[in-house]
Length: 365
Image 1 (tube, one colour):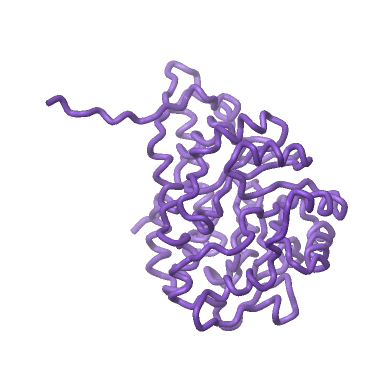
Image 2: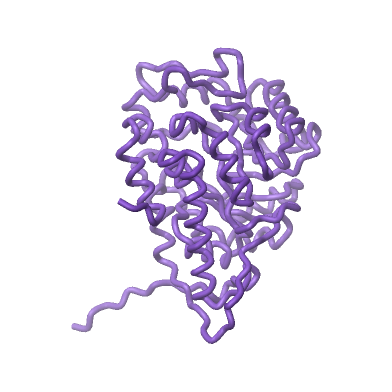
């Protein structure tokens, strides 16, 4: 089957991957309601397109934190990419650089941040978990900055790990031969199988700091000169608090539906967060983006760009870096087409008046 959209890549990846790996990548928390809503919420929004606009020339580029992106798409942080392809994050970062956009490298990458930056040809941001041992966190920040990362993305929606029941059933642990590339000590670099839970859940419970609060942003700012973005915000008041605490960017995210099940779909809260931020920080969104029209809807509702996660993994499974490049090319083509059909020549033309809601029409009795 020719792979012509992101759903095709997903279906083929499902057939290729071992069940524990597929379940780890694709699953959500508990009943996976938020996981499904992240996607289905986009289908409830319609685009009220403009006509008779000269769209013979279109420009997809945008600028975020000083970087000019070829399109308003960033690759989200995703752990353990070597489960999808032997080159893991190295294949991804090469493809992302070739596509002219940004990769966010995970703390829990299989490749170290130094290895990733050695092959990067474009900007890389570093996603950060706050460890109980603050010297570990400080070391990660210093290494990311020294390696050439241009921003920190702090995940703030994981005080404890969400219960991903598929991982519990599989007793998820890294396959033999893989470890977390940013660490050397065995207790930091690996997660043994556990008799009654996911190994990653046990890892997070043992090492991540559940006491992190707003006051810790001041400490983080004191140890780095990099811009700081917070990932995991779904409320306007939290967004305002983030801006007041001097963050440079906000990512509206519910961790891909993997943390608190029944939390809202990100696109549903994006407008509220955008109004609270009011242009005072960069605003991004992730969760459920699979089509170019989704990207247009997110930008119209206030995002500067979107982050795409799982489809990148499906590209990695289906061809390594070439597969990732193909996924990004498909998205680029779909965004371009959606902009043309909406009467938008540039990303700045994508405005709120394009957004409408689908109305269910009752049958006449």
